[in-house]
Image 1 (tube, one colour):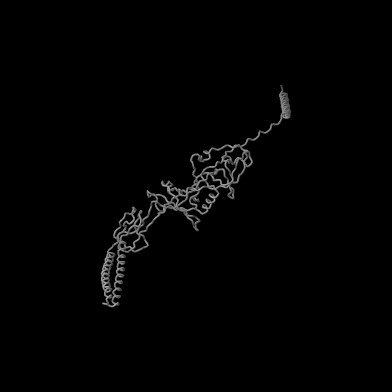
Image 2: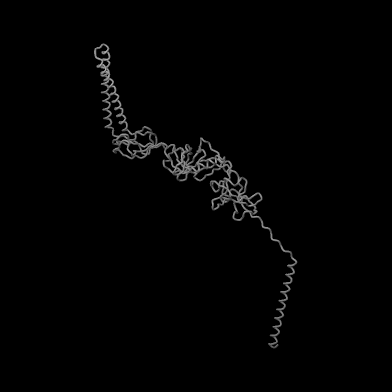
Length: 422
């Protein structure tokens, strides 16, 4: 076949294929349109409620505690100073040891005081001799004047001399007593029993009466006092809570206190609150509390920094909400999301108190039995219908209430024990 004929035959076949493809596409379009007209439209599937984790609020019997900073103070301190001047001959104690009341701590050179005491005693004996002589003369003259053997003037003079001699004797005796006291002051003794500090003088030092620098210090260390302070604002807060019945007072005779030492260890002996200040410090706005703590091992030393854990009282029906469930507005107000009985999400304004662990104490806005959104806060909005799922206490990081008869709540260091509010 010639080339021109073959080319014409190829063109005819290509045109036939294009026409066939066009007819096939048109037929497919007609069939699709017919099917779409006969089939009914499908409805969209309804959305399922979102699952959110909730915590059901339950009243708890909560023992509130407050941690306050304080210092240890010796209850009795005696600064040892000389009452007479002289040279220190001996130091008669071991520094840091226990001394008894009346124990001699220092011995001063007594030579001059012994001489003064001896002179005063001699003056007493001389005065006693004069008294005896004048008394005899006055007694004789009193008999003689009765028989007019002497004049009344002579008798009166003898009686006056006897009285004067007795007065001189009293003066001499007082001087002797003063000399004896001064001689005794050369033996410097401890006025109290306690632990003696370092000595500021050594033998050979010259000391003077009532000098400004103490020779040493004796302190009683068992028990010790702990002075802590609290703000007057917290005192008012606690009084309001007690008046409202949200807290009950503890035993007024037993206000327990525990100490945490500087290394965060717990001091083994419990103390007792004994004094609450009645005057607010104008400079700091705080009130001073005092506690007495046993110190048999002398582990506590005056001036140590400690943290005192004080029991405030007991709230029989405390409501605690997880901090994760509470949001704060720019003005500081608090709110939380609550799931109603119809499983609707609503926003609730609440008033919170102190932070207790990872929870807030709820003062107003929530009631026992309400369900607070804990997990999924960011996935829901107010008004949504949700599927609430209870979150176990272990998953919220909260120790179950049944783990302790009275759970202990440690609060911020700004409160006062209930027993200290008088």
